[in-house]
Image (cartoon, rainbow, N blue to C red; front, side, top):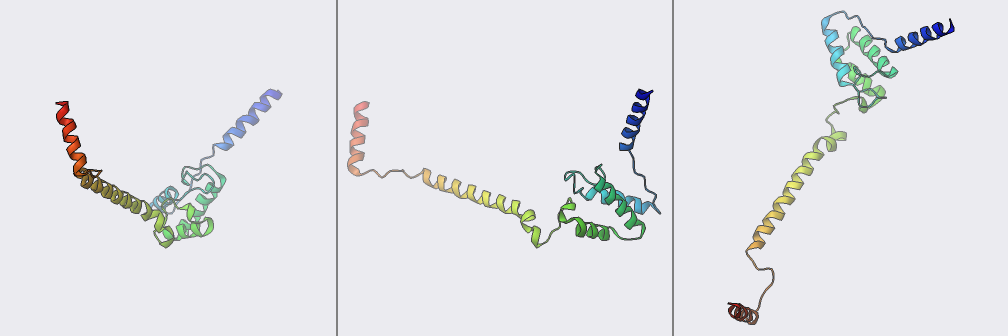
Length: 153
């Protein structure tokens, strides 16, 4: 009997973990905006999951808040602004383009251009240096080399 009670409690606990959230929407546009927002906002706890994929309690709270705000008639931008104000810029999967994130957006391009410039400069110097002898040889040394080469033949 005790074993049956323990198994029932275990099954109940496991099924409680697998709760699927369902939300009722006034219209299909709100449903689509909800899907878009939960896909582009990041879970603060999971860090690499968006809100749609996260099972963390904070993600469930954020999804409820998004649903509430959309049903009240707020825009997607209003929701994003609220989430950023509450959780910080990290909540955005795609960071904003402003002066504080300029290095993030343009740094890789600048590094690539600097790298290409270095490669071009090095290759031009090597090409320019290929035709010239690396060591200056005096006339006496050239004559001596000619004699050595002639003796070898």
